[in-house]
Length: 130
Image (cartoon, rainbow, N blue to C red; front, top):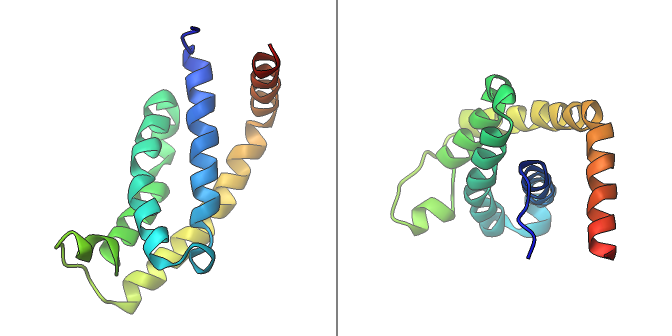
């Protein structure tokens, strides 16, 4: 059994995180309950991603604000856990604005790391084929 290197672990976390983000982008597709539970679950891979990419942490403020605003306006997940949230249009607008900027930044982040991503995919495909 092979032990994953840090770069392989980072790649696996990033691919998983990207898949979750794609699901999160459309609450109408997943439904609000799944959207909120995925949003809460997104916190763990985001923290792992930030720890594996420590230099990026200073630029992660927007991600934290997006997750925090989503938690604050939770309609399904947190109330199901007995935690009351805020029903406020201003917080919802803030959440949506953070999302718009975040989508742009994720696109730029992927574009800036495209060569590393492409190399990681190639290495992963070679390992899978072995």
